[in-house]
Length: 356
Length: 239
Image (cartoon, rainbow over all chains, first blue to last red; front, side, top):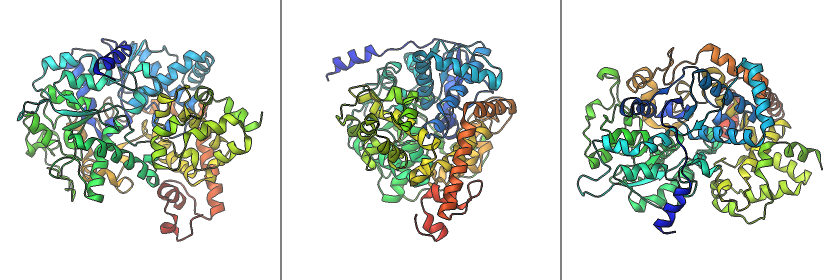
């Protein structure tokens, strides 16, 4: 397909994204492994874009991981989601924004199910009432948090201090975009650009000065596979999926990988460490890996936030080579400090993978 | 129409997942699980479409239905709008309801997932919680995780968190009233019953295999299903 053709396909998959007053739902994985990303997202929305976004202390998991690992019935997941909608309604919000892609898929699937099977929605309303005495309104707008950053990507670029350009060569950085499977695979019309040519991350990268790499395994899963990672005996599946992707993308020499699902950056970051230590293979230059970033982290870097304030030290693959290419200053002495510069020790160095 | 197929045909995931499969194999061509395991999602659609009771029961007792990663790549690509990944969810649900899951090595792993993820939800409000994770169970997390989890208060606080704290924010302690609501939802909507069923059926299987069964993540049966390394743990032969 030629570029013009792709643009036409993307245009067919535009979606309505609310412009303000969001109800935020945190992610089981992102808050544990990339905590700086959720903090950065809220900071960008409130301080850079002047938006109202509410983080209700009472909200919980949607049970998405448990649902896709098949230990809870669909009725349970739907009723927990109904409770989340009840919290949103009670707080006066109508626009629901999950941080997690699995959650986004769950919410989309449930709203579609209720539309096609209204009797199921009635049953879930009864269950929620019986369990908690709660009622709810369905959201008027459902958007993943990456959709929001996509919507305001040009505003972020305009406020930005850095571009995704190699300061030494003047060339755009070469970026691999990896879309979480549940963003649009089940319901392509709910994702920006659809499932085959998703534009949500590509749009950000283009707006911020980088260039997207098209490579053979671009749409292959990172390898979470729910039970395929959760159970130790199954993890060969998970690392094999990631490895398939790394080997496909490596010849294109990407400067970094950008992701919109909380799990994908975790797996692609950690499996590079495992492959390095087990097989001595690294996919970056000079014994380094390919940095894997969340879209919130990339937005934070573009806006000039300190790399250690947005959590880049919580990655196993070192990000310093990327910071140097862009020309972002960083203080290595502050990388592994606690709050207010407190010394809390430093991580051990892997034997093969080069970190700083 | 046989009884097992009746159960399946009542599941909305099965209703939405299977139209008329034309046996083209597109799902298998793009399936990450098929690239790793001896797995063929096309066969799942064909067998369930056949309504053959014996073959469906054989599937429910097999490792086969547990190979899928539920990435839903098949849903995007099927030219007839089938979703073998959704059929799998319906089959796994039925396999647990009927107690067939313990008849396969992969199916028996449901106990480990129930104890790790299921119990985490009721205890912390989330499927995953940092304090439960270490590099013994998850060695791929690497030395960076050892550093984080040895200093959770400091690391999370620097990054805007409220680790195990009261009030709002990242990794906060979920209020007791909210956890009670979750428990009540689990009781009413079938999750508690499914958890009990997983425990009860797993215990029966453990007794049959002669593997000691207890609570928590230290019992021998848990280690057996979580690691797949029974020989090293108990010295017994693989069943």
